[in-house]
Length: 633
Image (cartoon, helix red, strand yellow):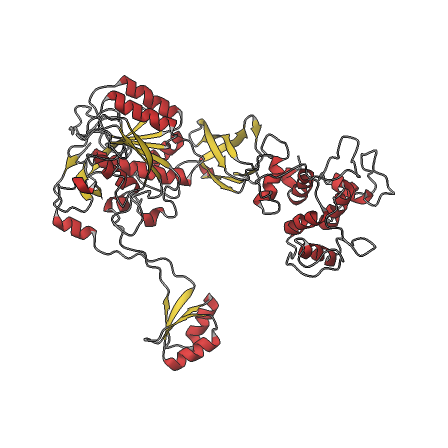
């Protein structure tokens, strides 16, 4: 959907005026004073980062207290914050400020890793401001070298609004770090058939596109395309389309297809003063409004002959330009809220829109002007954070919900505190169900999809019961795998290795150094931890002065080590429930302690197997439970 607009010279000049951005005051400062004062200052505050020759200036790193002290002692010295300048080479569209999606407002989110496809006339793969990750051509006139290259210009303009790169040149898109794909379903005249467009949507489904932009229209219902879009939505794809450029005064529904279809977010166009762009379609299917008048964006240089400035950029007007604003903002939201479903993200768009026109949803603006809100305050939602296998879930806006639960399958997850949950997972994608009652008393269920990328041990997956324990140790950098990527859970653990793991877990000094033991030199990987454990009275070694770091550890020995480190309280009157543990054994009290504290339940219901060698996964379970009682059921 495109309407060409004459580019005014004054506009292009104003867009290129410098605009400096400043960060908050940091902890480094520039001090301007006399040479004599600077000598005294640098002698007293020995955190000089930089000195200048032409002007009496020094750069100092100061705490708040030091800054106050400097002011008091050198009242005539001038102290200036060391501000952060950002490049002005990338032009930020004024429309991004209108939608709160400028790079400064959106930071640190940039759409990183989100798969966005523009189904259009293709994308100029040679444009310096665009990085196209791949694509397909379903049109009749595919390009010879790269089939999905743009030979009309429309798709390139749409793509730039979404994803123009931050490269100190040209413009910057709303979500410059998305993974951008071109689906060329429209020919050099800007037209495509049902079969070509539908085939393009199918390609998007097969290639797991997260967000699909459709800046195209037809006035008639097209059932094959509707069926494919319904399937895309079922697979979790977000679909954004232009509402159409058929105008209207409200007497007739002028929204075009595919914007009319229920799985699609139909976007109308606004002028710079937030009025309806005169050609923008109207109707009840309009869901959101976005800037769409005189939008400056990328264009194939070889086709850049409209504005008489052959620079690879043009101003265009239409709902085609409005739709990618919504697509870009959705990419920001999806990066920030990766676990939320496409329906929840669509709900966020509606709830955060800036109401325009008639109060509430209307036929010109839908729910209103699309906005990017970094902090959602309009609804309950679960915020997720995944770091090295640790999954933290936090319910935001608890006051808007009651009776909440999160379930994995049929199991209700325990809260660590009200509205907070912690899980430990290995690599995989895990569906959870968040259930709650909203402020209107309506019960709701929402699906969360948690993606974990590490730990990715091929021999420790969530199919084994002890996997969460290993993930916990991995996430805290207590325990890792081998160079081949495996964990080797059944490998016997050695005494030196055990001391490394226990030492890491307890924060012992692991610096390499000479030890008390004759067989542990300073270069041994466990030397620092072994010496720290000796100094703390945790280990004594053997009578011959050795430690035997390469000797495997029995379960009894491990019980002693665990108890010596963690010093669990226990009732000595309660005998261990094991037939193979006797009071005369050196490990008897240690086994009493770790059993009563549920660090272990034994090797079987009636045995502890004290003389059996300890393997890596069993030790991992002992250590995880000793450190984190939440693993004790």
